[in-house]
Image (cartoon, rainbow, N blue to C red; front, side):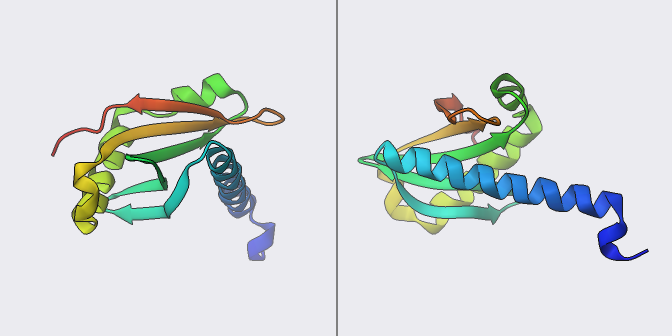
Length: 129
C-alpha cells in the first residue's frame, strides 16, 4: 500500500488543505474589514493561533474553524482549545512587548462551504496564565 492509497493519510491531507483554504478565506475577509496580518499559524507553548491581525489599536488573535455549517464551526472551540490558544497568545505577547499596551482579544472566524466567513469579535476571553 502506497502512502496515497492509505485512506487515513488521504483524510488527514484533505483536512489539512481544507484548513489552509479556510485560513486564506478568513484572511481575505479580515483584510477587507481593514485588518493587517502580523502572523499566520503562530505556534508556541503547546498552542497555535491561526492568524494574528491588527486594526488600529487592536490585536486580534484569530481562531479559524471550518466545518459543514457555521454553527458547527462555532461549537468546535472547546475549553481545551481556548486554554491552548491563550497560552500561545501569551507567548506571542511576550515575544512582541510593544503589543502589551494595545487592546488584545480572541476573535474567531467560522467558515462553511458556499458561505461568506463569519467573524466573531471577542469570541472568547483570553485566559490568564
